[in-house]
Image 1 (cartoon, rainbow, N blue to C red):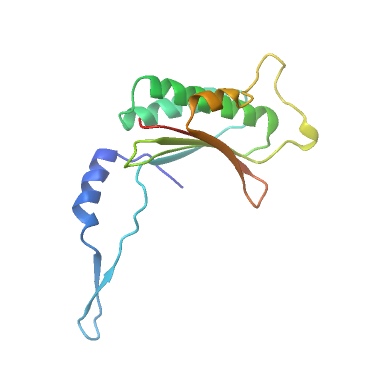
Image 2: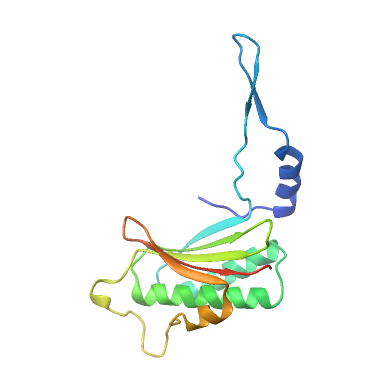
Length: 167
């Protein structure tokens, strides 16, 4: 699906090739046809997680590693780790598998988007974790993020996401 990419190397390659469209030669009449390259963002990572209480720890580790590779530092890392930890905890308690964490960094603004996908709500709202372990009630997301929300997919799965300003 998605993989961690060395953003400096890819950015240099992108700048070197972005202005030049890919060329394809038609062998019948020797004309050159321009085929534009897709402008897919390169700073994108997704990782599947086990649907268990330890998933929050694995998600925090993934977020820290990815942000370090993107050279994101300081308070931004701490906030994003907290947000992902809370979203994963909510998904473990209130949603079904599968579970995955997603990160995306916009080139122009430096904003970082994080998402946690799950299999949709647990039937009959049966919480799975003990009462002393809880995710957030979204108040924390209101205070820490530029925007957040939930996207429900046609198959019933959901992605809970949050966006943080320039990193």
